Amino acid sequence: MNALAATSRNFRNASRILGLDSKLERSLLIPFREIKVECSIPKDDGSLATYVGFRVQHDNARGPMKGGIRYHPEVDPDEVNALAQLMTWKTAVADIPYGGAKGGIGCNPKDLTISELERLTRVFTQKIHDLIGIHADVPAPDMGTNAQTMAWILDEYSKFHGHSPAVVTGKPIDLGGSLGREAATGRGCVFATEALLAEHGMSINNLTFAIQGFGNVGSWAARLIHERGGKIVAVSDITGAVKNPNGLNIPELLMHKERTGSLKDFHGGDAMDPGEVLVHECDVLIPCALGGVLNRDNAADVKAKFIIEAANHPTDPDADEILSKKGVVILPDIYANSGGVTVSYFEWVQNIQGFMWDEEKVNAELNKYMTRAFNNIKGMCKTHECSLRMGAFTLGVNRVARATLLRGWEA
Ligand SMILES: NC(=O)C1=CN([C@@H]2O[C@H](COP(=O)(O)OP(=O)(O)OC[C@H]3O[C@@H](n4cnc5c(N)ncnc54)[C@H](O)[C@@H]3O)[C@@H](O)[C@H]2O)C=CC1
Ligand SMILES: O=C(O)CCC(=O)C(=O)O
Image (cartoon, rainbow, N blue to C red):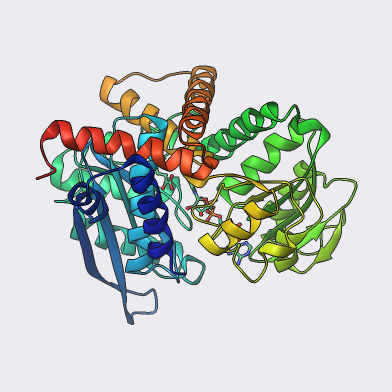
């Protein structure tokens, strides 16, 4: 099932549980605005290269639209639409005053030099600068982008609108970024995991973990789980995969990745097939890479008892059904990875106030938001006798529906 069909199906199920009117349902589903732009740049060798950039602004009933920008070969309108819609429900679950958006450029950032990436980011910003803004739509990093990408967007946007640090989040600290934002998605995921495990009378330090993806989110989740005594028995990324039944030494693996750019040839474990990580023997599986990786082809083989969706929509609806029947507990993306956008909100607030928080405050507030959202989701699960995914969707959709009705937008 494609990403948009899967996301919309979850939304419709939540809408049915909440008993939303069909006109309101339609208005919540259809995106506010879809932008598609040509981005042509000279390559370093003088040749011309053309890429397609997207920004989908899904909903702004609760505040400015918010969401990352992805650079990946598989970026397409369907995927960006699904991710933008997920942002709307995610910001509502976190109860931060935003709507949802997402963007991306169909490119492989690994094939571009740093100066080509800079030109591409600046051209994309020139094409969308009138449609983003501090109180309209605030981008952030996602797969294939980082703080440097945000610095280029900030600089290009500021040429048109004056110095505007709050137009992007996840930017470098020197340009007004927040302490703790880089780690925030992984850290939020770990707070979410702790909240879930506590419900089951368990804790991280007694369990084994498998992690798919070792970029921003995966590497931070791994580092923080390792610090808490969790045993990470398998890790994969696009370069390969490594396993160790006694637990990988994550600080050493991070240094190896930093030194070689790859997970290959790490002496602290055995190489394995990257696809096997998802079905590896472990208590907790954390997908931190692409969407749709758990599907009807592999769901029955998953060994984990818990899945923490650090990636966006890693589990398609077929897999959701198979895994639920097996009794696997899934912590859904719109809650599990909401730590990133929550600290983005803290960054935006700090920029608007012109004041910087220390990292302890950022992390303590993040924990507070993650715990509150978990309790709110559990409340919806109890009221509607539903899964954690439907608990999160009904929570988010209901908040957006209420804001929409209060504004008088439903007719
Ligand atoms: N960066 C953020 O703050 C947030 C990210 N997310 C989601 O988390 C996921 C990861 O994002 P980031 O860590 O930021 O991206 P990243 O670009 O820093 O890292 C992506 C990782 O996935 C790996 N990967 C790619 N294809 C793979 C494959 N076929 N098999 C195994 N590994 C593969 C890459 O090698 C890399 O390690 C995405 O789904 C993103 O939407 C969600 C919320 C916030
Ligand atoms: O930090 C943000 O604004 C957005 C993060 C994001 O793209 C996501 O949560 O998927």
